[in-house]
Image (cartoon, rainbow over all chains, first blue to last red; front, side, top):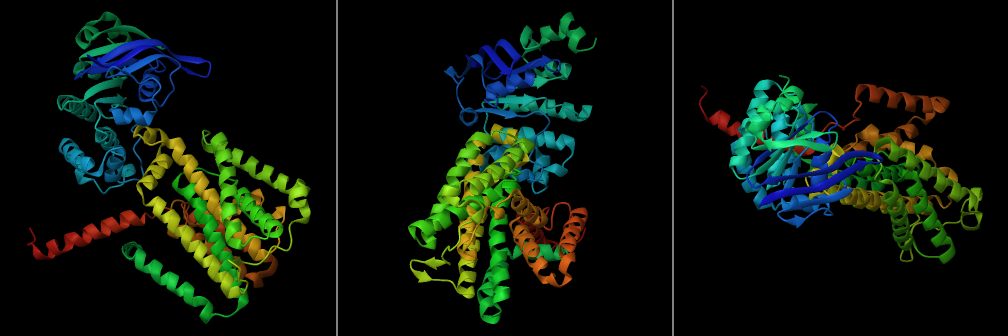
Length: 235
Length: 335
């Protein structure tokens, strides 16, 4: 059963057609990656799935329920949680308060329990719990953004460009963490410019070009595909 | 300085109580009606600046239209008091409701806008309200203003002596500070500040951004509306020249001067900016120059305002954890 299914999703910014009928699905327990160049519609897809951007056509199903008209809060509650692009942590909040904000819709005792799991995955965040998030390094802020999304107890976690602007070593660490998060039972939909690293940990992937899916398949096949190698892997 | 701030953070509640007790005792120690009037006006501006700080400091919406709601409150109270003969309590409730309705209408239409666009809309709104006050002569008497507004009274009890008015305003400012404090320190307050920090991320966490924006906008406008009703009863006369965008700017200056997002900062900022111009009256025509220089210098030295970058909640947490760590340090052996 597909956890998330997009059917002919259309999304516009005014008269600009950002998504021109996208259909794809994410199955329970998978890591699926959307790759594509700047302006291909990756972030728009993420925002449309989470309800941050309104849907202008097509349908979105989550656990076989039509969520196309749901408000974003309801989608978060149902278990679709986004970690937005550009590590948008709350800079004046402490690490702890950032994490608590991630569990905004959860009960206090649920948050206490989730926090333990999150600290086990991100021990550095526990050390820095009382530090103001804006003073963390870029890598730590990205960890925090991912950890904060986990506090929402997602069934499906959407990660928008988690490797953006980070040193290669930290990117590796983050991708390892994404795998561990999947192994703990969270399905992951990943948007990445760093296509090689993303494909290496993914099960399947879709290639987005100017608002359309032009290619899809298992991550391994795409890694080997000449088209993808030329356009996105720089080989 | 750091130690002093830690001390304040740890004893915020005690300090507030002491301050309130001192302010209650103040009129018994000082009988000068001139000073009592300054203090009363100072409390009113603290109340206004606090309401604006909730909107601009905690939620992060920059507005240049706050004086419009002050004026709406003042006109509502003035009209009801002079035409229907109702007491100040009823006028204040009415002022809060009417200001709230106007903010709902404006907010519903404009709060989807972001940043400067919203600021411009509030600026325009303030101008529109002023023009209505100026030109709807049938209702507001236009530039002639509304005279003869009865002095503060409560359920028929006359409260028009300087000391009584002082206490009326003290109660109002304490109540509004309490309302704003409890909002800011609740779950909603955290959500509001998250919206200020990053509204997209807040929405992604499941915060209903638009709902909270409207809610805060209405609460803030209602509080300043009540302050307007007080102003009308206190001065006994209002006209449109009080409720201009320049007045909005003054309010904003107070909030920024004290520190956006800081309740103690706002209290301090609004107090300093109302009391200092009075204390330097001797400077005569140079008074405004001095006032201007004061603001320019502070903004250069401390661009965040007096207490804008001081988070007492975090200071307290840190001071407490340091204190918890200390006995361990002295008890354990050095490595």
